[in-house]
Length: 258
Image 1 (cartoon, rainbow, N blue to C red):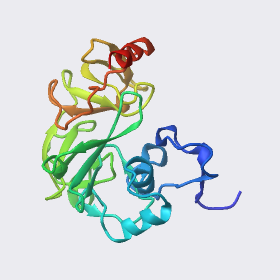
Image 2: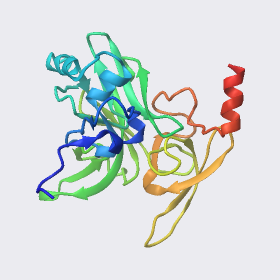
Image 3: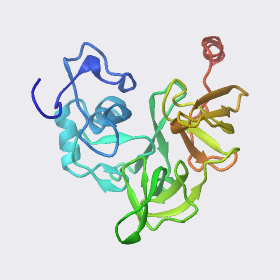
Image 4: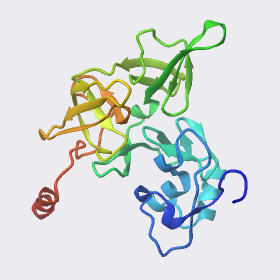
């Protein structure tokens, strides 16, 4: 093997949730190093070319990005392979459109259209709380941000409401029983439910039990749970399905009804 990080990605090895076809070519765009992991994001080129259909080729995406039309979290991004992940806000001022990246109940990225007002903030999960040099407290979020001098009440696994205009925390929701959450990993990826209880396993993974709006109960590891609202109301607008995973029979009946 050659030294250093891999710079290529074959199409068959690309994550399933990118939903790329097999026969269009050998290669897929490998996301640049950035705030999200390679298999937990979508590169900008897939968003503009395959999802929003604003371009037909990689060259067209390059020209759109080079004209500084695309903003991710209120910052202009010109890298066509920039990784866009969960809760990121993509804005296209030229068309007046704003999108938030969420998961659907099948675990695929869902490009959710949002209003101008909602595009001014995002939710970030707190991954770590620490004290740095000169005794300055800080938190690290799921999208790679380091925020200094947070509210002392903010703990790991809590969710902060982060203003993209002022680059500061404007609110937070603690990781508590009774709060609404979305699952961001594991077999239940994309499902939503209210936290019912926390099962502690010292030395191993804590298990969180949740219940969705249809009454289905499910459980997952604590690190897969992302709090999105206080009580049963969400701080961000969510896709139409409300994060409820349907069985094959239920899905078939729903299609027949529509």
